[in-house]
Image (cartoon, rainbow, N blue to C red):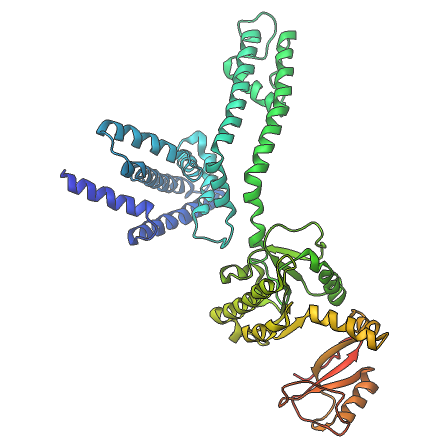
Length: 509
């Protein structure tokens, strides 16, 4: 065959199995997925109908045909693999051939390729149980985990820490070989007296079982020296298990635990509350939220970077992520949340903290508009932002915040006011506390006809709900009217500011 034809064939095969952006790759993968689905269906059908059914033999033949197709697919995938090093260095034809064989062998040892190899080994009658491993080929499905694929993390951990794993397995293999060979020489078939070791394979099996502390008891040493070897293997087994525990905790555990980033996104939580950002300086905010929503209230999610701090109460759900990136907001199901509170950081200067808060608010609004959630929602997402510098209040409102709380100025104002009005700060603290008479803003109750006077609204709230009306927000007003005149008219669509132990139920839509 002409070299250009060979080269073109190799390029087509490489694109079909190793270049996801090509059309032929999508066609081939679609065909493979159809075969996987069919093979899984065949396996289920075999279990359902049983060997006594007249179709059972045909299903077996069809299953073997599908497995042979997988064998061909596996061989073509390995053969079409193009090692990157071939393009980087100039090598002789002989060295290129050796390098290609070595890298393809290493490629076959990757976890996903080992799974595929185990699948096709089910062609052997003794290994038909391996057919169940074809379910693991679902790991090649299109991305289900958007942010932290644990399977990909495990594969990456194996690849990045292969020296540690190789050391651990080499140590275990060496100890198994030492124990098995020692027992074979001591109590093998040639030894005098009774023995349970019928061959070298039995001694290796005993060594592996002893080293892993399983201890089936089917093979046991009877001589004093053999038991001494067993004791050494038992002690070595404890160190081996401790070694693998350390390797797993340093490598695989982090990859497995990353599934928590997907847990909330894939849940069915709706109408929850989200706190964007966490700072130890704002720890009292969490206590205040718990007091407001109660132990059986809405689910509260803290969406912040890093691992969960130990001081965060267990009542809160922690989701790790960056609230200034639209690509990560769905981790906390922002589009399904009832409200968001953006907390400023105390670790940086106020201007920098406010800049992060404003960017977070803008990102939230942009995400809702881009995903279409803003138009699908019955009620818009309420965003409350904490601002530390009063100069940035207007910027936060422009970015899309519904409410801006100037915590620093509010605290300083209360301190200053206490100098000229002693005791007023204590009263304000009670108003801000949960489960006390707090400030609320809500529509005028439906059982009161509008328009009417503010005096009538105040009298109705007091007599029917025990609430004290102190202000009004009319549709045409730019600011809330506090302590308005009794004869001030309250038009439809107005909201009333009142003091009450809890929000007034049955409010006007």
